Length: 100
Image 1 (tube, rainbow, N blue to C red):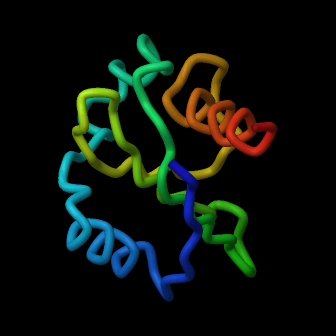
Image 2: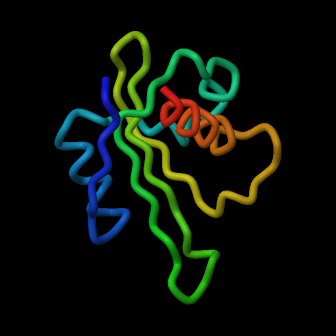
C-alpha cells in the first residue's frame, strides 16, 4: 500500500481525520508491540509538525496498519529519543518505506 502524506493544521485535526478513516487504535498505549514486532506494521499515513520557535513542539503523527488489519495512530514527540522505542522503530520503517 502506498503511504500518503496529508497536511492538517494541527495534530488534533490529523487524529480526527485519521479516526474518520478507521484509524482508531492508540498505539501509544501499546508501544511495546511496535518495538517487539516492527515487521507486523506498515506506515500508511505520516505527517510531521515542526515547532517554529521551539524544537520541543515537534511531533510526528503516524497512521499505522498491522498485518492483521488493525488500524491506529502513534504520535511521537521530539525524535531525539533512546535507541529502543516505538518512535525509533517507526522512523526506521519510514526510511525503509522510502527505499522501496
